Image (tube, rainbow, N blue to C red):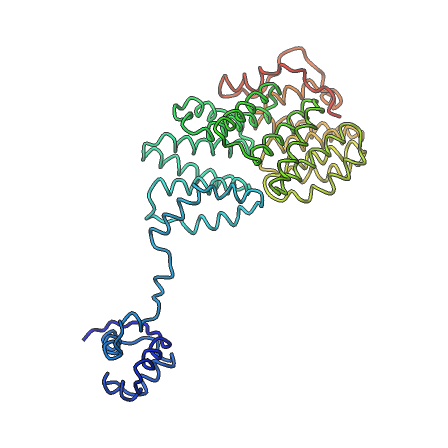
Length: 448
């Protein structure tokens, strides 16, 4: 006798009995079970029956056994094919691009992790790891993001897939750049640009050039070289037909920041307005806030402190995800220029918690300016040295040079020397060229 039991659907069972016009006691006799047993099946008090009893009942009731069975719980779960299809859709349909305006990267991470399975095809699994890396760095989980990207790199070697390797390396560039590891990021940029697979996917090529421009900007390279790399990325995307309003917003936000850094305020203002327009079309609230905070910094540098403070206080609270250290540094500068030194120091202190050494250095530098203007030369000198050390640790050698050429250097008690600046040597010649030798434009002499 079979010991298999199956789950019965009491409603379906009752409907079939009524359709046949049968009595419960008669059906029980035919099945050779107690009448109370059949009553319990119909009431749902007993949900599981022996398979042979259900088959026998189906024969008597002139229906298929499946008609009397409850829907299997197994059918409520995704099949292996469902998992594979969903996993493929995550990256092919660009889920993160859809979620970026809302900033719901934690939700995306949970969804993607729910699809991870050792049964997935290797390339599909690698692509999910790439999306997880993307989610993590956007939430400042840089070590987790790096681990996922390294897993993809390992899979690309096993699969002998150069394009997959390039995608992994591009994400590592972003992660290292976000973390202020500029030397490490630049080495990978060179590796990516020399990869023959780079021309296969225009979007990856553009992203690498875009990351290169950010890396150069953070390192303190000439604005001309930053603009050249950024424009090249834009040209590739526009030529491929993949340039979106999101690309436009991010492109212009970066341009506004770097142009401002080099004192090209008119161009920075134009870039800021274009960024705001594109972000508004997408309802990209975080991008709108970024643009308005940059606009506040521009107002402050041009002496319009009232509007600068109003804009900053209104839009800074809206910056809720990503590493906000840069915006703390901008805010500290806005407060400092209006003589609100305590507020400047407080905000800069918050920015020191950034994951990015360059952003930490920006905040230390704002603290140095504030202390200098307050007459606290000892504290100013200490903060200045902190900023210099952070820039050096990040590989931002162009910024170290600008520190030595700026007015703050003498304000805090250092004497200018004619000799070439000595600093931690970059690990590659091209990095020295990119961050140190490309200083064609005159440095911004007075950031105070």
